[in-house]
Length: 442
Ligand code: LLP
Image (cartoon, helix red, strand yellow):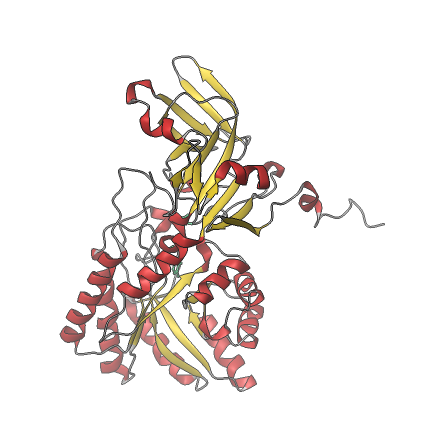
């Protein structure tokens, strides 16, 4: 089963996470409910730190907030000693509201507005991850005008097609992200950055994609980045000694998947750095990674109550749950696959013989035929009133959630050592009209 590390089955057959019977959590917090296991998040942060602890290469780990952000998550990341990648003024606001140290914030975004740039400067973020010429120019001028010194990294597009869903490829030729290495665009950018004396070019960045299983693209990426560093040195006499290779490590969503481990990524990255430092005669003093999904993905589950079980004889058995595409749009957007269990009958899920199980389609309550969480799953016979737990929903589910069909956003609850508490409150119907105004002004 693909569940957070603290998961077990209680004597009553209920799923227990972080010492909490999830059916008790349902009584307290209702469903749909996102449950996050703090121990799993901490384990992942530590695993990154430990596996990337090399005596001869300094590595910085930065959590990519887009996977899941709220103030409590930022606090946890700060305590774990990681940096934070934010990609909009809004994410920056959440991070600062949590008290996250601004110096450890890396401000991404491929179309930062002037206001966002000013906000980042005023907040004294550690680094601007500069995506394009116009951002460089605005940032450079603002720093000059206000006499601010600002560290930057330039995002390059390495022209690498990662082996993942098309929507999650971000480093292939033609991608909207970063400065292309083709036609010397990126080289020009480095030259231009040098004209702004208040900008301190500390390194280059690239992110090639997400949910990556075949790690050979990281070897290629490091080759491309170090080759570019050599070119910059040889042609411009500029020394760049830091690279940020983005995130991307895949996680397990369904039993058939065998994602690589953090230690596999560490080995590939370390070997590639050694190999290409030698080949291109360049040296790095620091490397950064920006994992998102692999920190939080497997720490989360979503609990739903089964409403109707609808049989269309000989065609389909539907399990209708009290949430759906509003709390998890990933199956619709990326054809993402998930695994699920009966939270109130975990033993049945394990012990029922395959022949006794039935094929079900787990679908949501929204007015769309594509509102499917799992198209085909085998479960013991399911009835109305059972509880479905969908695994591995920690990343990009709450983050991509919506109020479609007037569905209030579900609560996010954290669990640890037998305790549970709310990280994000469930929205109420009132929240749905908070920002609305009347037809005409009075
Ligand atoms: N750094 C940058 C600049 C990124 O754009 C991303 C993800 C990451 C780091 C973190 O990548 P990760 O380690 O999480 O793979 N909504 C999609 C995923 C989009 C990822 C966007 N960028 C999904 O639900 O699968």
